[in-house]
Length: 179
Image (cartoon, rainbow, N blue to C red):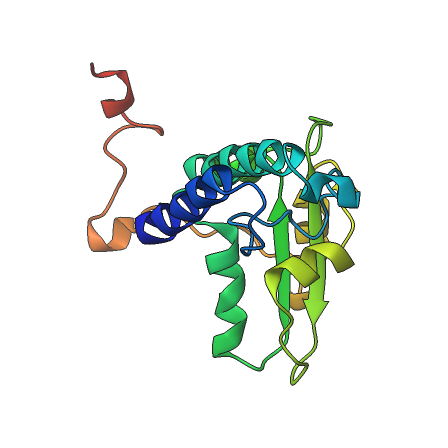
């Protein structure tokens, strides 16, 4: 979690709750895709405090549930290259987003391709421009791989008996049974 940022936002939130008529910049801003707080009435006391409280919890939850690879940090890797890039954002956080296989119809994903040399757009704008697609991203990944591949080939051998490297036991091995 980005503790300095969290402390700064909570300090601003506390200042707003102590000074309810303050014109200070809000500590938390709704995400570009979040339409719940579009009504201007949410900017007036006491609703502003309720909005900010909710958004504070949401901000914490976003960081708490995806601390391994926060998507905005991963998304910003586009700043390091001007080559062709496909970016996928899955629902459900780091682990569930990866293992959500196609036959499980839960969750969604967003996907887009940035052509070589195209300008970078920020993560919030990217989310606003790319609507959620229902289900797993695996089908899109399979299509992407097929487009980049030269064809199907047999899997390589997992041993090299000519070099004295043979499997000791069948997969997955005996260590998985140890406690």
